[in-house]
Amino acid sequence: MNRTNPNIYKLQSFLSNAPGEKYQINFRHELIKKLFDYYKTHKKIANKPV
Image (cartoon, rainbow, N blue to C red; front, side, top):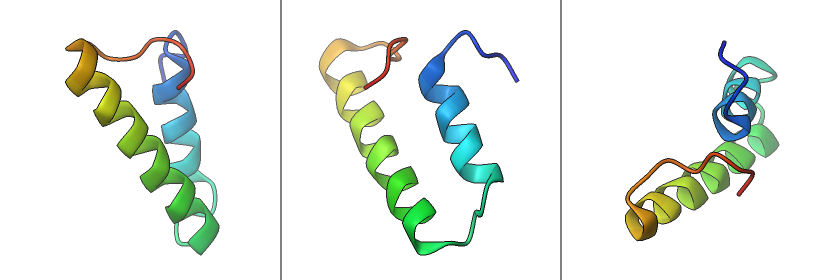
C-alpha cells in the first residue's frame, strides 16, 4: 500500500479493519463522500486529509 496519500491509506484501513461493522461502514461512506466532493470541486484527488 502506497502511504503517500493519507486519504487512500485511511480508506484502505477502514476496509481491512472490521469491514462489516456499522461504524466502519459509516466512516467509510463519509470519507468517500468527502473525497468525491473534493474531486468534483478541484478536479484532482485530495492528497491531504479531508
